[in-house]
Length: 187
Figure 1 (cartoon, rainbow, N blue to C red):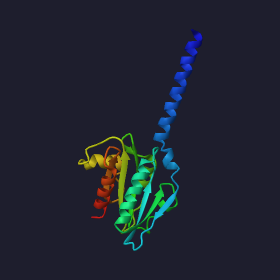
Figure 2 (figure 1 turned 90 degrees about the vertical axis):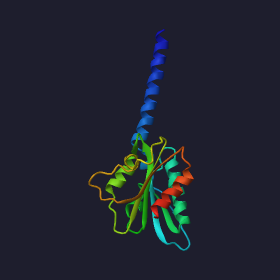
Figure 3 (figure 1 turned 90 degrees about the horizontal axis):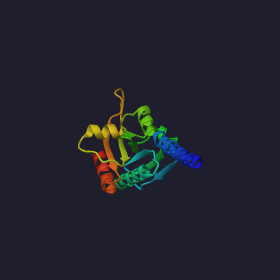
Figure 4 (figure 1 turned 45 degrees about the vertical axis):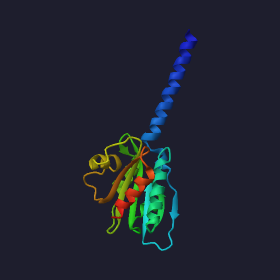
C-alpha cells in the first residue's frame, strides 16, 4: 500500500511539474523570445515597403497569419519583409511605409514580446502601424474596445496611431480575415 501511494504521489508531482512548465512557456512567450529571423517577400514594381513584425507563438499559427498578410500586401504592390519580434530588422521601422505587428493572444492579452515591442515602438512620421492578434477564443469583433484590449493593450501614454486592428481566430476563415485586414489597412 505504501508503494502504491508513493507511485501515485510521484505521478501527481510529474504531472504538476509538466503543467507548470507548459504554462510558463505560454506566459513567458518563449517562442516569441526566439523570433529572430527575417524573410523578404520582394515585389517587382513595388508601390511601397511593408514590414511585418511577429511572434510565432507556440503553434506557429501567428507566423502563418503574418505570412498570409504579407502575401496579401505583396499582391497589393508592396515589398514585404517578415521579421521576428527579436530580430534586428524589427528595431528600425523608419524605412518602411507600413508596419504590421502581430502575434498570439494568451489569456486575453497579446504575447508579452509583442506587448513589450508595441510599448517601446516610436512611430515615425509617415509610417502607418497596424496590429493583429491570433487566438483561439472568438469574441464579438464589432466591439472594437474588446478587440483592441486583446490585440494591442496600449498604455494611455502611447503615441501609436493604429490604422487597422484585427483579431483572427483559428475558427475564422483565416485567408478571408487576412484579406479584410489588409483591405482595412490600405483604405
